[in-house]
Image (cartoon, rainbow, N blue to C red; front, side, top):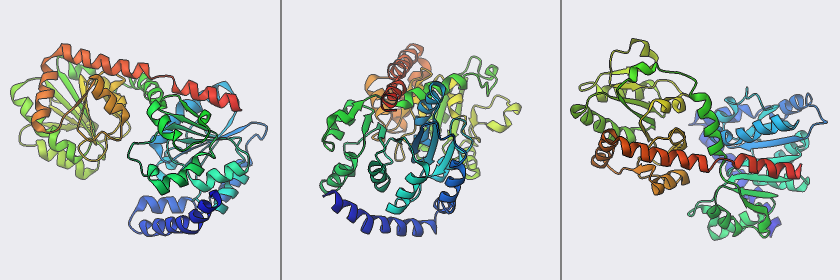
Length: 425
């Protein structure tokens, strides 16, 4: 049956994927960058791999994009500190690849080749990894099969499986049974994920619950973020600061009118709003939405601050540091399609507000269950929740402590994964 699925995948699925990628590249610059970046992938790998010390074992970490790679970083950093490995990191997306070229703990950075049988086999022959570590969900069949055929162990870590995933549909599930059984270890985020993977894998000893390295990574980053001092704290003296992070237009349609209304009745409120995409168009729109009622200032002009109630973030990569100034926070995406990272404000011990679309995030669901997170469903609901957090210091502290404790109690996944790696290397 495995041979049948290999045949179907390589004769039907792979050609279809190639066609879809080619067509999509006509309309999507990101996909075009990915295609261009792969033109000399094997030639570059041969040249770059030649400089590696071949006496060191090589561990290959693959992530779909930059977000998943963040979860690999605590593991890679610790591996480099404790043992002398060569580290190869690969990406499917251009954003992950382009933003990681200078990652200090990687000896090689590359795209993963498109998933044909010949590409996968050639890739494995060139890099000759001693262990393959796949982050979260980006499992390419031909690369797994080539790894298995070469006798190379492979781990899927931070593994999750949603209740409604297409992988559990009858025909697709049968295909994935043969795929997941060729992995050496599946290290899951939760017991629920482990139980769902057990429906695919014959040897349940392969599956182990270790937790989520995102907790370790966000905690690690929070330590350095506290030291960045992006904003003079005197600006916020005797003021209540509300940070709305990674917002989309759908989030802003809730947050902006609520904040304007709050400012009519309460003094000394500050909103720091960080749109997910700080394009000129988006920044202008936020300014326009506040224009008649509240003064705004962009972060890049903060040296000219003159008591504005709204600070609009026009930079990227600083959101985690901004949460250090907050009394409570809102995390965006939750009125659009899927929520962004709730751990970033939670690590600082903040109450975390979000909209109803949180099915993609076990962390948001758990925070809401514990009480550190608060789901709001409309403007009226959001107004009541935010107004209460502004006036009720005790509730802010209680909910913030729940958030902080939740992060602290879930640290340590990286160490458990390192133990599994060291057991096999």
